Image (tube, rainbow, N blue to C red):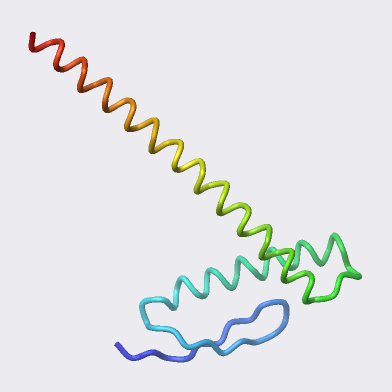
Length: 95
């Protein structure tokens, strides 16, 4: 599939971005999410320059992502522990 250019609007500014057809929906959702986060920051700090708003929004988004990634790892470890306990119980039943 060939790549196409799509236009997304973030903080009242248009960006023409090259992406594959498979990535268009994700790119649109990402741009909309970033636009919302930047708008929220701009409302709470109206004098902050747009570049700093973008950096703060990016830091907040990455922080949320990393926090969720850590939670996922915790759930994954708990799931492995539960599976190990279930296997132990099943072995005990076979004896």
